[in-house]
Image 1 (cartoon, rainbow, N blue to C red):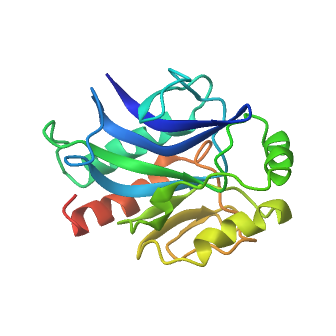
Image 2 (tube, helix red, strand yellow):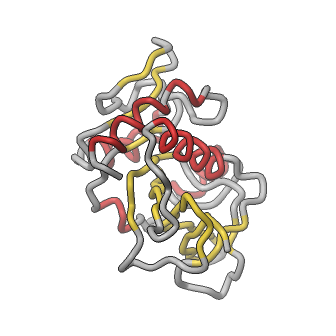
Length: 207
């Protein structure tokens, strides 16, 4: 049992991590019929996490490696439930969807950007077409090479509830970030800055 699940694609040796889910409680296997997506987080790209089985094409456990983002998000969501006084029910498989600016697995962002720019076509997570109760942004500062990928999200209306920490202003923002805003990465961000805002959304939608 694990909390971290994703679907992996291998394209000519390039590993892409798609439909990544962080469940609040360990589960035996995802169920699209019973699982409840409560929100989403958007990062840059998958880091060092790898599939448990390279031959598996459906959702499978994620081998975290040195990836700290997924456990960090899980910790934040559990604390937000506690803040909202909402019990995490064992009968409901609650999860948060992980989206990325691009989905190529590589712990070195510079190398990942170089690789993705050399690929004429690469997969995009189908979950980007969904509507979410909230989105927690974690894609860092301004980067001309990532502008197009950020605009892929800012040109959509994926949620009515945006949550991110403006590093320059040192304050939480609840509007959609622009591509040149310095969106503080979750790693290194004190959880108490964002937990009250997530808890508010959880209570609003009775999640």
